[in-house]
Structure formats: structure tokens, C-alpha cells
Image (cartoon, rainbow, N blue to C red; front, side):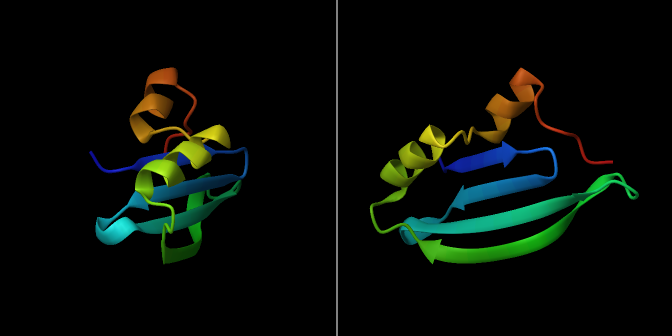
Length: 80
């Protein structure tokens, strides 16, 4: 199973996706109140030096959950 993590704040949403070769794609979105949706703000791809499993563990300690876990909790803001 590939790592997919999200953290949904009031005005920002961050995603981390695990890729082959211990690479991680990171995406950041900012909420626009007028448009009532998120807009891309920043992205990058980098190597998880400690490996994806340890990277995922450390990110979960910082409050990131899988997208499915966030949807099940009902705490992720839906896109329009």
C-alpha cells in the first residue's frame, strides 16, 4: 500500500504521497473564501531519506492521517 497522508487546516491543506524509490510528492493548497475552494499553492518531490515507513510514522505524529481516515471521520473539507 502506498502512503497517502493529508492534513486539513482551516485555510490550508497539505498532502504527502509516497512514490517509488522512497520519493515523496508534497502538495499544499490554500483556501479562498470568495471562491469557496482550495487553490494550488506549492508542490515539490523529494526523497524520504529514512524510508517511506519511517517518514509516514513521523508525519502521523504531526497529525497527518490517510485521506480515507479523514473522510471516515468527516473532518476533511470537500471541494466544490
